[in-house]
Image (cartoon, rainbow, N blue to C red; front, top):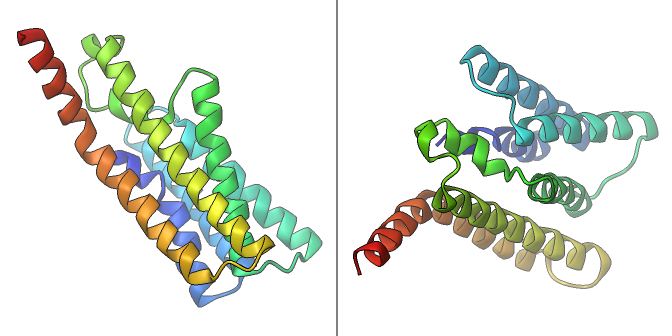
Length: 185
């Protein structure tokens, strides 16, 4: 699914942080974000809110860290990155353009783009991603600002991402079947 390509810089960041410094990981994520955005343009795809947001997020964090020499803990930097991703998702909802909509329009015929079902599916998937990032931000904050064990943060991260990915993959078909059943009844 194309939407998962938009999260590639996020994954590159966490791989980079494990093998290098936070500063280097942010620059790696920024470069990957730019490459993902350029790849989309090269393939003739539209500019995505998620791509622009992730380029901006990692670019700003990389510059901030490079200029201030901020000493991030692993959990604190995860908190900052996930808070940024949550902001991107919530902004997409607030402006009435859930970030998933742009990806879905590349897979669905234009005649369905304004259908209530299509729009509802995308709003719900975007809210699930918002909830996943909110769970991550809450778990990271709990570790940074209190005595919650790091392993709990990792469990929340795995569960939140697993749920969001599974929901994104399965919900559209489930919603279409449910709508068809309701129309038939």
